[in-house]
Length: 325
Image (tube, rainbow, N blue to C red; front, side, top):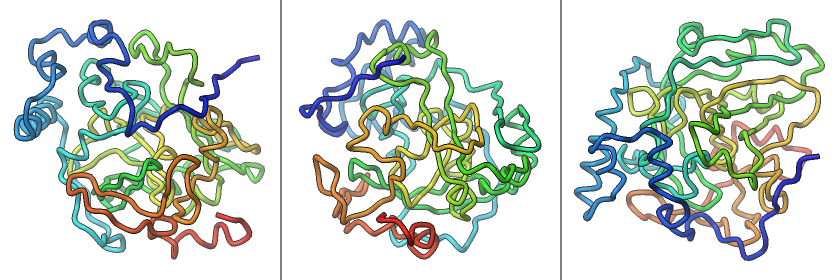
């Protein structure tokens, strides 16, 4: 039997956490990821001003050699707020495999996302293991402007590039018994030292009901801001379910399994009293340690009223008409 550590009452939210430089041995992490170049180490050492930080991040994105993705914007999905600047969105990310803080971009350079395959299995007529490039070629790629809301109350607005999950579901033909979709990220503890931390139920897993997975909003994302996903955003493929809190949008998907039982998920397993399986954005249901009634926008600090289902009620409310949230 595997035992997981349940966090105590004094466990603090990520937005109040000790900086990563204190949390773990930076030198060991740099060596593990192979960040031996002077440039990479300079980036990790930090910036002394907002301008220098912006320039460092922009240089980091340029060095990542992210390939452009041609995608037509779907006009059905519009925003009620300006897009978040790319350098802001690229420097404030949750990706626990690499960091307990937000500056994931400092730690991902040495991690390899190519080649990459996605294994699709379980209750499907056409199980397969497919290279990410081949999968993308089979899918209807488009750009969508979505709001993104974290359970920690921060929010952003970004131009995702991807394809409806329904297209993948149609490709593999689920059997009638399939009721849930379980997604799993990579597991490479020799490359990513935080996956050695025994207090977490690695690898990261997430799940949706079949109805949620088939919803037109549910997107499997391969790009952002006109190009491939940077690693800190979950390259090369991640989930985006904009009416749910961000931790549901699993990054760097390695496996997709169709099952007849509700799968265990990372945060629900770790702290079940704080993070439920459903995780729908609801301003009327506070987190046990903070209110969800408002959110603050990254980059501007603007405080906005949180919308039920993050403003996507018209698309998803019918999924929960017999449930509380």
